[in-house]
Length: 193
Length: 239
Figure (spheres, rainbow over the protein chains, first blue to last red):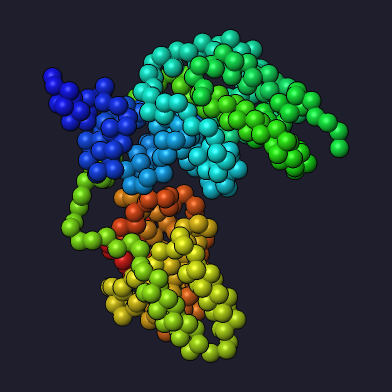
């Protein structure tokens, strides 16, 4: 197949994100199906994990992809498309979970602080490889540390809320959270810009 | 003010990322950020770390029909230009009409209407405001109205004319079809059958950035929140 043929085939899995996003701006519907085929399950899986309800997860998935189609809020200077999608998915899922009480989550994309741009914002995230790496790193964390991080991320709980829920002193939660996050950061440093 | 240790700064940053700083700690962090600009960089890295969590989840395949549902939703429909946004000129002109309506109402209801009117102006001045015209049908064929939606605080002001006061035990409900899904916005009150307006608080999940409202309608139902709209539509808007 000629290179130009490949580039024109938006549903080809080796089509870089950058090309699909450009085609999306040009309103080519194949671009959305290409992105959905690439990241649809990632978005759905995360929404399902947070909401525990497949209908809700479907709604969120639909909202996220339709949102991608309709507006230009993805800024490549801030990071990869896949991390943008996970951030948006998590934010909308937690909002749905809390039924509108707006949570003050640190949204990197909404921060005005200038963060040094990552070197390769359009890197193709090899989901399978990344998945294995993160799974292995998490498995190496002590159970209690991992639990704090997962509750903070998937349930949107603050450290004090976690302490109340697990009936553990706040100081302990903070220690475990800090140790866990720092350890994880070291283990996954080549995935972080 | 004591000097901070690297460990303490680390604790503050982690607390920030995991979402639990006390107001004092937040102030402290703001101070330290000025002194140690690298702290934000560090926070960003920790935030990125936390955001890697979902990649470890065993992937669940979304149902097959979801893909086509999404793609169908973006298929171009009519060639009629979608006018979701009105120019400020038109919006202000409508405000003049609405204010004229308010001034014509007698003092008895004035206090209530003035509050709603001020809400209207506040809504109109807000950039995330969308205005829809609704037309009467069925029993309310002579009714007309406007619905102003403020996306940012999820409120709507409904201004209607010639809509009869509902019978005892019944109320008017506003519904919207947003991105193909029917959503109940809320109940509104009619004080005068000549003209009336009311402000409602909508559930915030109704509208997201970039959402498309294809239809609005007002039905007469029981005062108990209905799960889905009844078949008698009083007023509606279609894009």
